[in-house]
Length: 114
Length: 113
Image (cartoon, rainbow over all chains, first blue to last red):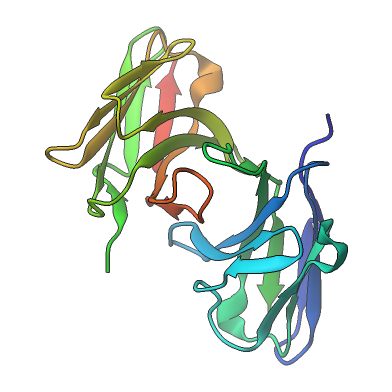
């Protein structure tokens, strides 16, 4: 089966611009997660979708970040306006419903804000 | 706040030797623990997991040990190979696996020829 895919792989934007990251989870996986790793820090949880509903968005840093998962399939994470501290690698993961769902990670999107 | 952390940022071992990577966690409610391996340019790759009702679990060349008394997790890799060179992360959650994960900082494992 195809793994989690993310687009783009790299994005370089200027401060104040908008960027939208996309994640396509593994087919049939109802759980979808966004994480990010900023330079020198550990991977941090951002939010969790169950199908199209936000289950937990406690990790979202501020209201410049907006995640959507219309239709419960792919998800987008928009940063508007981007700030320098938003630079990092954004990972998406997905898992099946129920306990013990191993989270499969995508390759990540490297975001650089200049 | 509560966190998961790693004792050593870099571990260098000879090819063929066994390696042990350690991790401490602070959330006593954690009930699901995972080790991930991340190679350059790739996302974290699942290695092995363990639930809080177990203290040991074995996979192919890997063993995870969980000591809930001291909140300690370790990953043992037997007969290390060059392909084992990567950054290893421990992660945990308290939702049985369905919640967002809390990651440690990562240990860079270097395999010396």
